[in-house]
Amino acid sequence: MTIPQSSVGNLLLGSLSPHDYALIAPDLVRIPLSIRLQLHEAHRRIERVYFPEDGVVSIVAVTLDGKHCEVGLFGREGMSETATVLGTDHSPHEAYVQIVGTSAISLSVEALGQAFDRSPTLRRHLLRYVQAMMIQLSCSIAAASLTIPQRLARWLLMCHDRMGTDEFHLTHEFIGMMLNVRRAGMTLAMRRLAADGLIGVRRATVIIRDRPGLRRLAQDSYGLAESEYARLIGQPLERGDGGAVRRPVPAAHGS
Image (cartoon, rainbow, N blue to C red):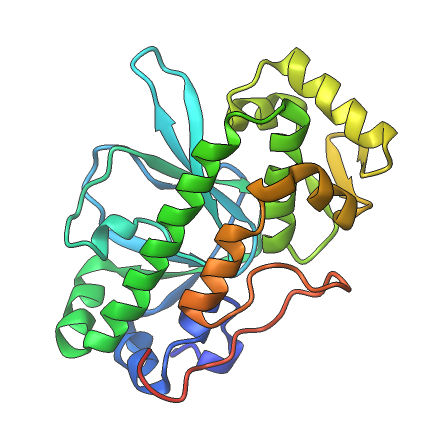
């Protein structure tokens, strides 16, 4: 059964022009998202791309000694395996679900390529997303010079943008792995944010209590990538003042 564009929770798909969406609609499949679901294995041929409707997916680099480090993240605003948009079918990184969501929409690389051949506007729309991800990466590199609490604040804001709730399941150990910080250092940073009333922590659940306070702590490390996404894609990524997650608005014409 074809998935109506009006029911899609992914901003990239939802903001396509009706014409471009119709090109790929027959090949779209909605799948459930479970925690730690691997969407792509490093150095393996990419067969399908995924457009989450909620949840958070980590793009992870694996070092030679087996350590994992997050190099990017996306959720309802993005897609997996941007390498396919650039014309290749391999990536040295893996991608897996780090905060559970309900669903993602899947599309074969073959069907995506055929749609690109028929619609330059579809390819341009997704290339703009690749640019947005490059900006996110540059902001992450710049944030490496900040304190652990500042980096944590930025990371939590990014997760909050992509979730439909103020509460999500996260362990200190997992956050530390994603930010490449020892567990002891991450525990101290979490305690500081909790003591300042910015977050709450309960049984591996993080609760966002003071989003404006987190923004102040993150300083300029947060905001640029989000505003550039809105400029490039035409959809707001950052959560609204009331915490609402906005629905995508289809473009009237090609992007």
